[in-house]
Image 1 (cartoon, rainbow, N blue to C red):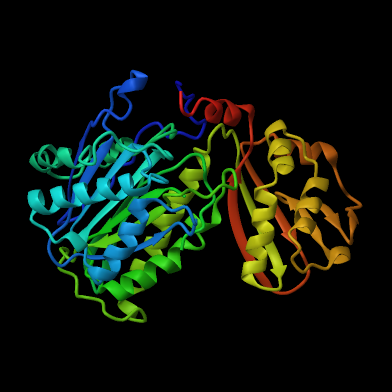
Image 2 (image 1 turned 30 degrees about the vertical axis):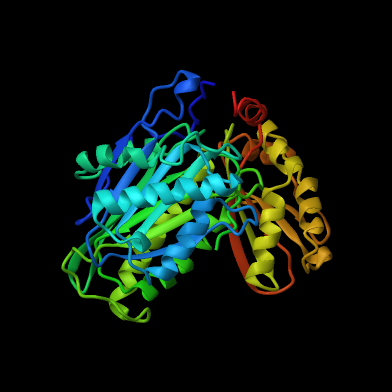
Length: 416
């Protein structure tokens, strides 16, 4: 089906900084040909020897064969990464032996064509679940073509190649310094539906030319993923294929960072967080059928995790999300969603705001409640909901979108 572009789609793809040492290529394997669509649907990234890699993946118990291989490769390769191949159109999840055979054939082709160790090769796939490929080498056969086309990454082409129901390609990047030496960070992400990260929901690849030891890179990735990609939800469903990987080529000339507490890492850490938050927001803004971007802040919870759980309870509520879609400032649905989380709260001290408007306090509707003002806030395309649960002093922010009929249309036609 032809998808209507998200109202938040940017006018153009952002200009992203080059990452020294990274090469890329895209191609078409024909995953979408049966739908009459001609497009690139596979990409290859190649990094130099000595590149560090870290990754976090779906916690789903029906994880794809690709996710299982990547976990194994990170251990076998001890945090070294040279190449990654990703395809759209088929998730290689719940495909049994055929899924493993597809991976083995692709990995063999990568080793033979690129001359890199198998344990430094990574895979991912996104698309329909439970459909074995007609030939284990279906993707692997593309390696000679991809290898011949390697060059400076066309970030937009790569971002389009692994898109499924995305209505625009997503990328973010920035430049910073480590010990006075310029370094760059660039990332691409795909995701629109089946989105509620539980990684360590989507596929995300971020590259830097900084020199960072694998254990420190892993620490950094886990640190930035939780308050960004793991704090968004479109529909409450966690994918079988969620993958987020961070590669550091070390090609910038900056000194090697081997300690996560090294103060020379401070600016880089902040820049990395900014890139991940940018990508996380783009993910929500391209949620299937989304027309509104929603920020939900939960304050004064007993723990940060409790605040996050309450925030996601609000963000994943179909009643809340459909009210937002309709512009109905039904604050009672927020009260409901907080309560059903079963997290500790002090009900009669709880307060709720829509934007700067105090909606409820003291277990009641606020004395100055203004229905027209609340409705005006819900009519905007950026909505802010803040809840003080009065149980502690911890906070968390999550981001979501509204739930419209377009979501039903898109998913009802996903396989046709």
